[in-house]
Amino acid sequence: MTATIIDGKIIAAEVRAEAKVEVEKFVSLYNTNPCLAVVLVGENPASQVYVRTKSKMAKEIGMDIEDHIKDKDISEKDLIDLIAQLNNDKKVNGILVQLPLPEHIDSRVIIDAIDPIKDADGFHALNVGRNSIGGDLLKKSFVPCTPLGCYLMLKKNIPNLAGMHAVIIGRSNIVGKPMAQLLLEESCTVTTVHSKTKDIETITRQADILVAAVGRPLMVKADWIKPGAVVIDVGINRVENPSDTSKTMLVGDVDYVNAMSVASAITPVPGGVGPMTIACLLRNTVQAAFRQKISKI
Ligand code: NAP
Image (spheres, rainbow, N blue to C red):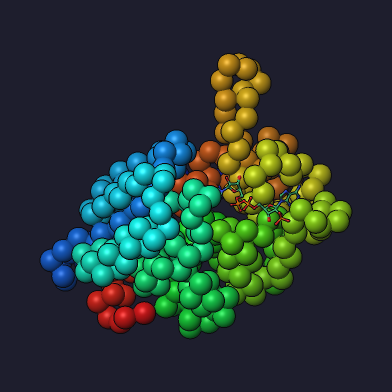
């Protein structure tokens, strides 16, 4: 068996194109562009790259972008004040605080200071709660962008996920936990494994859908995968390039080359989940813009 490659670049382009249509609809109805405010604290090079890419893609679909670049020494209070200012700014529809924040700032306090209806990342406790309850509340919540991207890729491949056994490796608030909730909502049987789980391979081998969100290069070997499973690799790991040790390369959490002969479909790294995350951020922001015209939270 050779797995089908689930091409995140193509699906992300479709999600961005749909978001662009929504942006145009919003502009024609309200005569203003949806606007995303991005808050970046410090000079983490990876964060700077993410923020630049987000800004570029937002502009491409006609969304306005406000960058708020702050010194790494900004106090928690000043950051909360900035969030309050963005919450009250009618022009701003989505607020994204680029993580990680410096250690002296409590990320949870900052995220929960964001107005939930502007929480384009879906990390606010109210949105987390709504996602956990599911059902109709999902229509009012924002789903975190990376698991939402994984979900959209899965649904494109398997429209009816009911009854499938999904195993998720990783239980972070950003990826693993919301991914589990989304798949439970689709009536999958969901197992979440993590660093304390015993005999992970025995569990992953039972997965019809395997989502790896660990941050350990090539950890998931081919013999961890059930033949015919669909594999979503969230991991982004920078490692030494074996063919030129002066260079680095990106690999996922899954041993992609060998997994190709076992899985029925698999996402590559790069070019899989990565592009979906930004596309889903744009999707969430334009949804936020519309919701703000209708209700408060
Ligand atoms: P995280 O917060 O570090 O969480 C990692 C999870 O993996 C934790 O739940 C941890 O378990 C578990 N884990 C660690 N070592 C393990 C092991 N040996 N066996 C089983 N489980 C293990 O990471 P994250 O934010 O969820 O991100 C995960 C990966 O996805 C990273 O590579 C990150 O760069 C990537 N990522 C990609 C995107 C994208 O846009 N494509 C977005 C976000 C993240 P414990 O809870 O027990 O510690």
